[in-house]
Image (cartoon, rainbow, N blue to C red; front, side, top):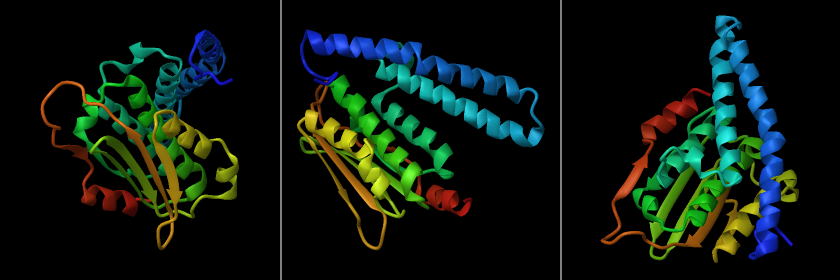
Length: 230
């Protein structure tokens, strides 16, 4: 039985996992962040910027771990769109460039918080797989609400899905999160190379009226500049 099972046993298992995560790995990451911040004040100028980036990355990891434990207080009023953009921004530090993204502003009106959490997870996991396995030079992230579906597409120009990635839990977790929401997750290798993650789940509006216009996104010029800076 997994921690997402419905019922008392599933809730208790999740609570136990959340406590273990909070009292163990989360404290280790927090200690690392504090150590990095202390080193920043003593480091040579040429290292300070990189240490600040690492400290900020640790801070984002802590935020994500607390959210995974069910702590909603760490969201600081961030909207669903903001959370997706934050996930992309964090990944850019490890990628070495800023992905191009196009996020539908209507995502802010999705009513089911569990679905929102799973979409944010899918963005993080897709980008994390690219960092670990793809050796990509560019990444495109598209999040659209079309018909009755939330459609997340993450594409890169890297080396494709490696055997190590296929053996790991990342791809399986992406698929299981989609399927538990009644959706699907597929992986493809579009020509000439790279990987396309196509992740889809049903969605429900909150509020009334028509869907708002497409939301924010980085420009093509920003993308080219990021690629050129590698």
